[in-house]
Image (cartoon, rainbow, N blue to C red):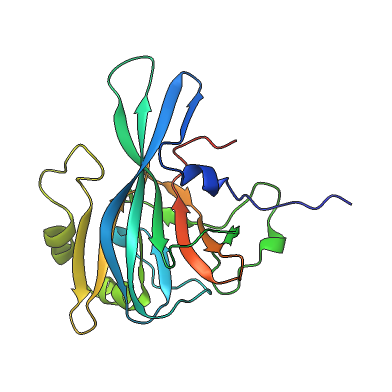
Length: 216
């Protein structure tokens, strides 16, 4: 009996510096960009659109601490016009070790066995941004009014390059919990996050795939 499998992209390819692929007249080349550290006071990781945030963390938790956040930027060159960059993936690095396996990051109550072939659970993006942050940070940000969010995270002039456009700020002073607002690939949509594990089964990191680079 054939079993349907939820969609898990080839993240080992996507997270390879210099990875290049051509598809439908466009070429994509990926490079990592370090964005700084994410402060996780609770170790409960939330993936969401931070400008339309929810506060429910994934079921997989990590040890509280500071962890590197890395954007994987794809240079996209087409047949017409000059190339431009898009954020293809956002990676929270928990352990700088080889990843042996990837699985979908789940919220409480989600069951991958209920998914059909090529289906996935993901978060809705309506403001063209994504983040990986602590539950403490997202709960604090949820209490901000729009004017405060706009003052901190929405500049009057947004840089054309998506890496230059990333904005980070501490949103919960007591713990130092912070949020990075990162452009979500081509913009709005639904995007899945995946958990990478080492050969010993420890969490190596979380990666949100913004589905910019074709991997099939």
